[in-house]
Image (tube, rainbow, N blue to C red):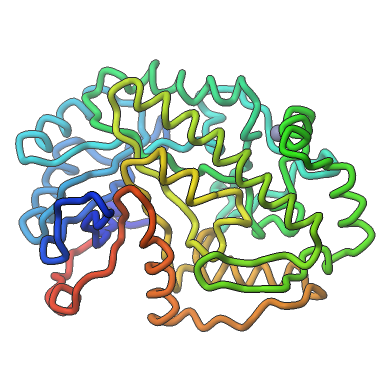
Length: 353
Ligand SMILES: [Zn+2]
C-alpha cells in the first residue's frame, strides 16, 4: 500500500456552462487517509504531500477520507482553503459503512447476498440495499455525526451503485429485497418475472443486440432491457435524493462512477446523476486489475455469462478511452477527467504517489 494514494486526475470542467477553457486545466487530488478508525497519516504528512503536489500542478479540489478525525480535517481544510483549494469528503454510500452503522444488505433476485469480492482477505465488502430508507438515513447521519463540523466544501459520493460482475450475474441482478420489489413495481417491472426469465434463459438472458461505445449495451430480452432501465432509475434516483440532501446543507457534490459503457450494469444512469452533481469522476481505469477497472470488469462480465451473445471484443486502448470521454460530453456538470489538449498531455508533470 502506497503511503498516500494521490490520484491526480486531469480535469477542467468543460461543461456547457463552464467559463473555463481547454487551455486552463485544473486538477483534483484524491487522498486515502485510511478507514473509519484507522488513520494512516498525520495532518502534517498529508499537508506536506499536498504542498508538494500543488507546487507541480494546479490543484483546485482535494477529495479526502474517510477516517473519523475532526481535528485532522479542520487542520487540512485550513491549509487547503488558504491556498485556494476545496476540500471534499470521500464518503462511501452503499458499501463499507458497517463499521459505523448497521445496514440492510442488498440481495439478488433469489433473496441471497451476492458473494463479495476481495483482492486480499481484509478487503472484501458487500453492498447495501439502495432503496432501504434506513440505509439512506444512515448515510446522511454519518455526515451529520462525524463530518458536519470539519469544514468540508463538498461530499464526494463513492460506492453509489450495486455490486458488479465481480459477484457474477447475481451481482448485477439486484437488489431483490421487498423494498426494491416495490420500487421496481412502481417502475413497471415485476422482479418475479425477471427471475423466471433469467432461470429459463440462463446466460442468454443477458445477451445483447446492440452495443454503443458510449451508451453501453442493449439487451435482446425486453425483460432484461426493462430491468436495467428501471434499475438505473431506482439506484440513481436514491443517489440523487442523497445528493440533493447534501446540497441542501450547502455542500457541493461529486460522484464516483463506472465508465459509461459499463455504468448501466451497476445502476448508474449518467443522465439522472449528472443533473444532481457538481462534477462526476468516472473511473476510466484501463489497466487496473480490480473492481471498476474497465478491462477487469469487462473480462469478468464475459467469463460470468459465457453463453451470452453479442458482446464484442474491446481493446482497452487509448482510442477506446477517448470514446468514454466522448460519452461524457453531454453531461450538464463538471467532469474529471476531461480530454487534455495535446499540449497538456505532453507537458503533464510526473508526481510521486
Ligand atoms: Zn433492496
